[in-house]
Amino acid sequence: MITLNLITIIKAPVQTVFDLSRNIDLHATTMQHTGEQAVAGTTTGLIGLNETVTWRARHFGLMLSLTTKITAMENPHQFTDEQVRGPFKRLHHVHRFEQTGGGGTRMIDEFQFESPCGWLGRLTDRLILKRYLTRLLQHRNEVIKNVAEQLVKLNALNPQT
Image 1 (cartoon, rainbow, N blue to C red):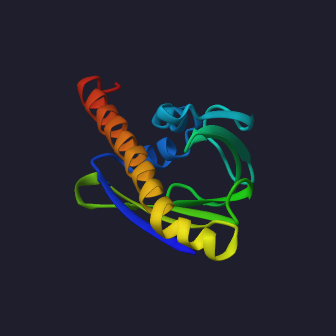
Image 2 (spheres, one colour; image 1 turned 90 degrees about the vertical axis):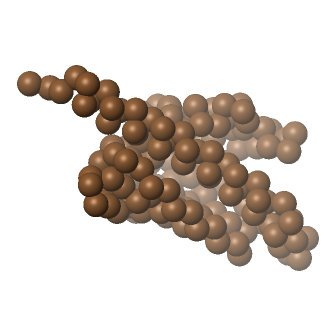
């Protein structure tokens, strides 16, 4: 099994980053380049505890489906999604959110995956999927960061009375 650990520092409140990270519509936007769409389960808005979403996307020229379920949630500090159906032998993604000094957020991804097919799957994981999935997560995190920080700027320009 491969574990990817990513840390993204975001100048936005924890609750904002937590909600953006579980927003189905934003996720679809971050994966436009794969044609990813939510096709079943929770297909729009914020996904919650024990809810599922089925994604359909093109990766490596193949149309793939992946259904994940939110198996744990502690608002606004963490949530976990796990594959219940899809191409992996195992997929487990823990999203953690910690407040930093100055009201920012440290977003931590612990993403574990394992492909089927024994030694061939392990070889594919190490040589291809580790890099590919790291880039997908980094891209997704960069979009979340940009949107969250833009929301903070907009709120500063238009404070509510």
